[in-house]
Length: 134
Image (cartoon, rainbow, N blue to C red; front, side):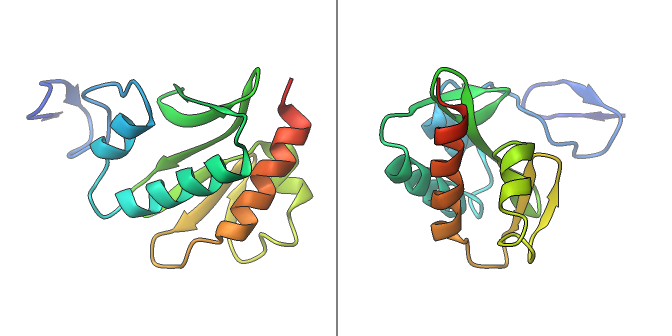
């Protein structure tokens, strides 16, 4: 067992990632992440914000979310990558452009050691807005 020194919760795995404090907004979410991940998160947030100026920013499922009547696109920090969550339809629609990235149903993994594909992220966000915005 491992006990988090910040919140006192016990976990099965040593150093297990979790949220000691649930973020209330994107600024808090980004501030709670590893310092090395923060520039990536800010860049993705800015790119999506510019692509979706009418979307509402919120936290949903403990992740930064762009909302348009429902979740349009989300992102989150992981230890080795940023997860972009546009939904399974978007991953399928952009399959060819995502050939160099690890994907799974509804998820695109953007490794920290590679430059962020900001133009592609904006294109996916706009596509999601057209598909999912109510």
